Amino acid sequence: MAAIRTQNLQKNYGKTKVLQGITLSVEDGTFWGLIGKNGAGKSTLINTLTGTVLKSGGAFWIYDTPDRELDQAKKSIGVMPDVSGLYGAMTGADFLKYMASLKGVKLTKNDIKRCLDDVNLDVPFDRKIKEYSFGMKKKISLAQALIGEPRLLFLDEPTSGVDPESILHLQGLFHRLHQSGTTIFLASHNLNEIERLCSHVAILDQGNFRVNGEINEVINRYTAVIKVQIHCRVPDNFCMSPKFHFAKLIEATADTMIFEVKTQEDISRIVELLVSCGISIYSVSPQKTTLEEIFLK
Ligand SMILES: Nc1ncnc2c1ncn2[C@@H]1O[C@H](COP(=O)(O)OP(=O)(O)OP(=O)(O)O)[C@@H](O)[C@H]1O
Image (cartoon, rainbow, N blue to C red; front, side, top):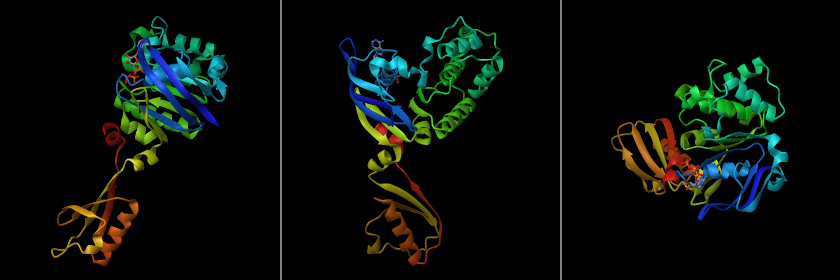
């Protein structure tokens, strides 16, 4: 079942066409990473899908509920928007209680403590949100998104501006939520985070997806050559026979050879050939194309 489905979804701000006909299907239980340059439309897509802004054209469905009936699907959704929409005059505890009441959930003092612990936010209950640091605001925004254990979670740059220890804590939390079946739609500039956490990725460029799909499949599709570093004892008299025609040796020292090949199978072929030449191999390290390299292309 699709958690999110869009058909030719469009959003304009005046004459600016921000989303130019997005068509996407996000299967239930998947973890999508949404990437794109500043102004590419990531927040606009999340805001449109969660009903914060109105679409200009096309259609979308959340768990088969059409966008015109979005209110009915809202109980399945948790949204962590950017932090500008927080109620600064409220304390964090009152804010969580208020947001919970909108979802029909009653929070006890212990529940609030657990919400704060979940997002690694150590703050007195009576401190007003306007007195929070930027990173603390991010965490309280995430805490409210998690209330009621939503089946579908939208996260807009949840770890930007957050300290490194908390980033690891939050990434662990996202991983556990995904493992327990939550569908997550995460916009982030942290490509390493997306590569490590997500099952799927979409690159938004000029109002449309340049690429979208299963993350390993996307990386493989854009991997023209695989670099493989082989630690081994290279004999002085070693020379590449014609049998190595499928591989390009780009560097060689007394204990390391680096080849460029086209497929994973080529790596096994190189190893077999080296062993048949009597060379002892200590380790083989393929260097995959990263999401960053694909994004920057
Ligand atoms: N309320 C608004 N009114 C007019 N234009 C807007 C509004 N919100 C966003 N835009 C414009 O829409 C475009 C996409 O903005 P959006 O915030 O969705 O990008 P983004 O990919 O989330 O960027 P970033 O990575 O910087 O957060 C930008 O050109 C922005 O100026």
